[in-house]
Length: 213
Image 1: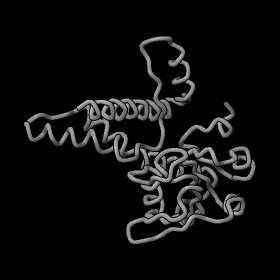
Image 2 (image 1 turned 45 degrees about the vertical axis):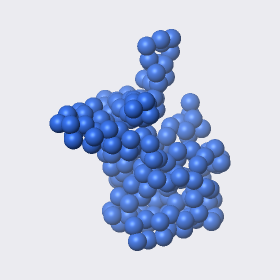
Image 3 (image 1 turned 180 degrees about the vertical axis):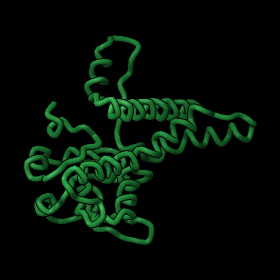
């Protein structure tokens, strides 16, 4: 139960900040600036970062186990269910942002060359279990994108019945891409190089070198 509480706490708070990010987007406010300012309070606030969703074998799954168990006891774990709904929708939200950014340049997701940087569920690991980056890739492929990815920790991605191989020449892939999507902010990446070469960047992780912070 201690483990379930820990992971549920994180899942719920990540969902909260993800929904705040969507709200700030609609209000034309920088959510990262809001989180940073709120973090200046010396007590009573714990910062969580918005992003493309949650992944791994704990945060997406453990709270759902707790919710399922409580359903067998005729109890509805509403916070858990709402958090899962919000976090699960984040890949779709970011795919919508990619579509909007391409539309602003008179381009389309369909047939567009989209390069995803990082597909592990968090930085500096090779674990793609429940990774929101993989969900984004699936959604982009369904919309007809000419999709490729680069992840120094994941040479091959098994997606349903397909195997997608990591690009070998990152610089060339960045030069060719209509849109570069930062899905996982591995330390390996030279973000200044990414910013210099890429035509268009959609950054789901708020990398400082890309945001200018």
